Length: 186
Image (cartoon, rainbow, N blue to C red):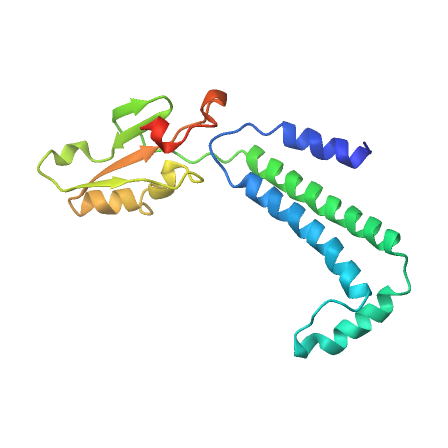
């Protein structure tokens, strides 16, 4: 394992899973981009990569330029560049997560919970006669995406319109919950 690989592994291991996130998706797409780039280079070098008509001339020129290099050299350079991009992405994510800004979260009464999942009553003062809207954020977002801050909150706008929002908060995922399906959760 080289030094860059060790650094990337260290960064990845320092992530604390806060909830289902698209990080795996981003990493998977990056890996897929790298692997498809290796295949595309081989096809381009041999002149077998199909180009749209507007890029056909540039494609032929690129193919001729790639002929000057050994395919192993090209693959190694591409792998190195892909690795550097992945390390950079992981480093950026780590910096984002360590940033000191913490938003002020609204505190709403919890009217139901199971495991780490909670159902928040975002307008208990409206009472039982108000229309109720069950709000279910996607699994990749925190509940506060619907209640960002005063003056910039869907929950607040609904409450002001006389609608009683009930907001599901998925919470943090425990290791034993990672394989749960919706049937198990509810």
